[in-house]
Image 1 (cartoon, rainbow, N blue to C red):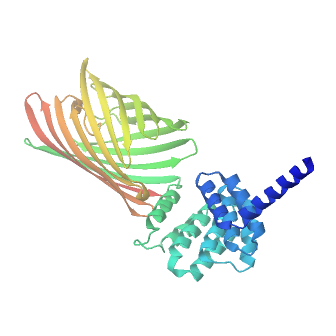
Image 2 (image 1 turned 120 degrees about the vertical axis):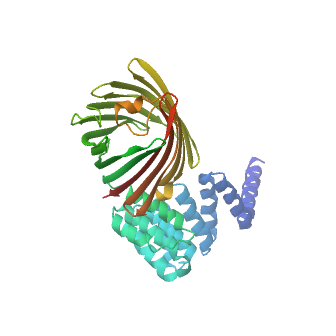
Image 3 (image 1 turned 180 degrees about the horizontal axis):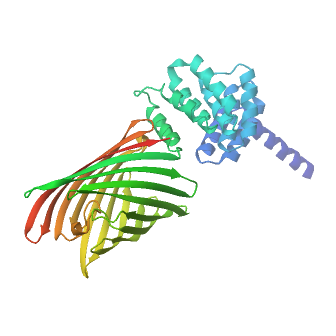
Length: 406
């Protein structure tokens, strides 16, 4: 009796198994559901059964290869797809999967070969393979070659935005930057001779720190003066860094005799904050500024509030600044609106600039790429300033900055 029971159960199991395999559509649907739920192990088990029962069905084989790829089993995925490729199953869909698996295996030379095949055989989707070719070149640090390939993707392509993003990622690898700038400040009601300011700087990025050296020249009050500065941006964590500044001048009244600054920055995906101080030692005055900011990201927008608490001649002055910034990450550019109320000037020139009672300031700061490594940054700022009690005047700040990366 026991033997009959065991025999019956065995035949029942066999019949169920046969019925399942004889209904491959339901098994394939089961595998798809498992894959959608990221249960790749179960999906792979089902597809292996189907692939064994229907070895001539290339669709089952390629889907099994895809499942292995999703489950990060690159070698298993590659073996199946190469076998199918030899059999002549070289459709455009299969070529895309083949390329993805090869790229994941870090075989960048083979990945480029597959991209060339895709460009030649499937010209209607060549932009996809141009982008993938540029990615493979970038992975090999062949950045100039990758940039040349990206120029072949037209601006009406579905892959143009991705191409721009990759281009930006490549250009950001540049370690060196030179910049020059000119600022003109003019006054009206009453009129005051304009102020002129020029600078030239060099920036070098290292793994854990960025260093900027800068020479400034200012001409106001009928005299000219120079100032030397250095900025340091050392990283102290994944999302935090310091800013340090030091500078000295030739002792004339245009710039402070020396200046110092320090600020700690902390960032996250949505928030950023900082806290720091500045010290300006003029011939006739000493200025201490306590400052910091709190900002938040809203997708492509960044809104921040910065405060300044300034002490001068034993008096305290407060200033409040709001920045609204729109970034264009794929183009590495931005446009920013600045609104400020308080005594702190746009640029730290002379000591009597801090002695004005109050000022309202509004301006636009715009940075954009002219060419691959060349950026232009114009700044336009208007100030309605109370330069002495109950006496107001207009100040117009117009600045133009040019940067080149290499």
